[in-house]
Amino acid sequence: MTSSRPSARALAYQILDRTEAAQSYANLTLNAYLNRSSLPPLEKKLCTRLVYGVIEKKICLDWRISKLASRPIESLDAECRILLRLGLYQLLFMDKIPAHAAVNETVALASKKKKGLINAILRSQMRLADKADEWLAREDPMTRLSVRTNLPVPLLELLQKTYRDEELLDMARAFDEDPGLTLRIQTEKTDPASYLEQLKNAGLKAEPCPHSSCGIKVEQTNPAALPGFEDGYFFVQDEASQLCVEAVGAKRGMYVIDTCACPGSKSFGMALCMENTGTVLSMDLHENKLSLVKDGALRLGLNCLQIRAHDGRKPDPTLKGCADRVLCDVPCSGFGILSKKPEIRHKDVKECGNLPSIQLQILEAGATYVKPGGSLVYSTCTVLPRENQEVVEAFLKRHSEFSPEPFTVGGLSSDERGMLQLLPHIHHTDGFFLAKLTRTI
Amino acid sequence: MAKLKIIKIGDDTLRQKSRPVTEVTPRIRTLLDDMLDTMHAADGCGLAGPQVGVLRRVIVVEAESGHPYQMINPEILEQTGTQNEVEGCLSVPGEWGKVVRPAYVKVRYLDKDGQEQIVEGTGLLARALCHEIDHLNGILFVDNATELESES
Image (cartoon, rainbow over all chains, first blue to last red; front, side):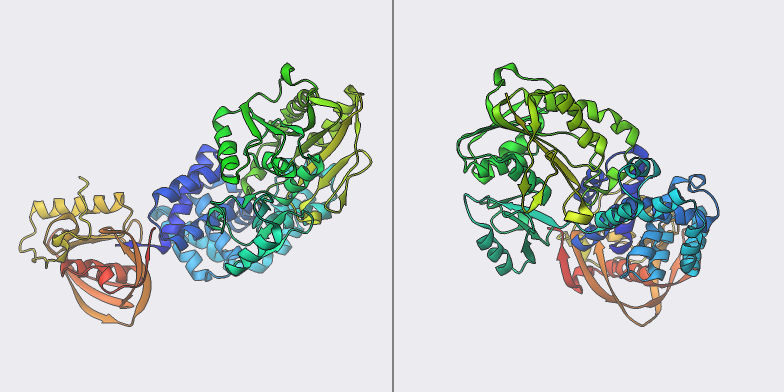
């Protein structure tokens, strides 16, 4: 016989164990394990929720475990650590799972020698649940903020230079919300109003995006299961990215370059603004990832895209001064998209330290393609000024031929420096930065 | 120990009644160890003789990890209550369904040394014991399952 319920937890345990040991991304491990497993669909859902939940709340969970066990989390071995996180997550954040089930099924996964300890700690949580506020009040302010936001201290220290603590708490709460799915409608094939109708007729909860006129938010996680996917009626794109495309302002017949195009959604959006005329040159460093762009363009029926591999840091002299619009959607730390990729929060901020110089290099290379009178848009999906405002300011200092071009998209206006920082707790989008510049000569 | 091949639904062996073990020989002991090994490798919590092509009344059950039972000639002495939970079967891969089982069972069996033992179980252990003993009588869980859910 095979039993389903304990296995979802057992699988979640294996995945978390693997992810921690290999320091790899959970989504890759999760997909690999789920594809191989014979769990029924509902159990797979539970497993996914447990894996992402534990990663998202790890800091708060670890803090509580160390309090309940009266010793630092590092002094526990990997098995205890991971099982305790799993059990505690169910106790604290999953109302539908009865407490005794959360404890018993977690203990059942433990090896014989560890059962006693895990059982004792989880049961003490049930007994001492209301002590947490008291314990938290006794912590130093930084630990307190870290536990409440589930963001690591080094990242918080960086963020505190720009954001007040209350704002960070709001941002963290916004990151915890289920992001759902945001679609950009293929406006050459259908229009947002009729597609929205189609979704509602299919019994799905959907609503238009507040800012982007071509965007729809839908309560569904698998885009391929939505009506009109095969026919290319839409593609997945966060509202912030849709606004970024709108800010580029590509028009019919233009020549537009997307220097870091993968997976292609911004190229698709620009091609749609151009009504599938002119040219969008979509480039990316990795040849193998370009098939994503090719497949997407094919599905959407967009043939004004030219796709090729190119290192965005290196200016291509053959493209000098030929583009009406250039978009540099640079690689970044990703701290704006924690609601979609919760594990990013555990990235070492030191490792992201060399990003600004790469970002500036890409922006400078992209700048060479812009015609006089043309526009250059710089974007990231992070909320750290060192990758956003500071990069653009450094660029402007070195390039007097460019000046800021303030803009308004979807009712949101940039500042006078042509910069707009979208924030999840204010704009209900990803944390996203964009800046628009004009080549004056 | 060795990993045995698990027979899948459609094979007539799964539909036959298994014969009692008359003598606990070294071969039976090896079979029980191999079955445990096979069950672990397949991530199951129970396995019966017919599932590995042996029509003898032997089962292995491990409802709680680290607590395996290797049972010869298991027999339900008492059962009370009902539970209705989801289960699957290593011989019916990719299928899941709810089966009404007793909430409590008392089972008599011979251990690997031929000693008579009694086990009482509730929850998953009760379900697994019933599921495996069903195999010895040619019954598969899909025969009685409701709300069948398949992998695809």
